[in-house]
Length: 76
Image (cartoon, rainbow, N blue to C red; front, side, top):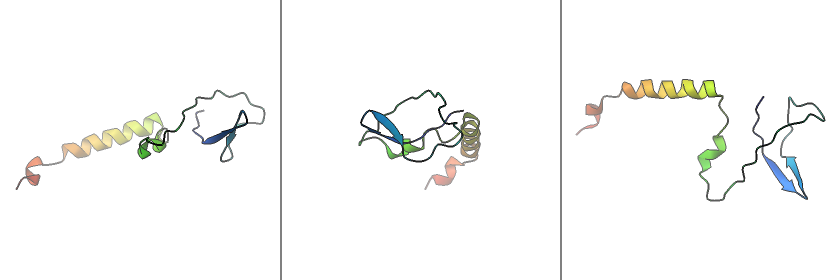
């Protein structure tokens, strides 16, 4: 299982900003830390929301829709 959560680092501990469902008390977990940057693109907060399968289906849909565009339609 993979989850992305937001947490605060304070006094040497990471404290989640919301409850974490699906993890049993005292379970050992692996943590990957990404420190936010004030200049970071706002769209990056959406990274990790889609599963790989969902992202691939979305990409396929976008590619199929772009194929339907008639570029001559945009010419004056």
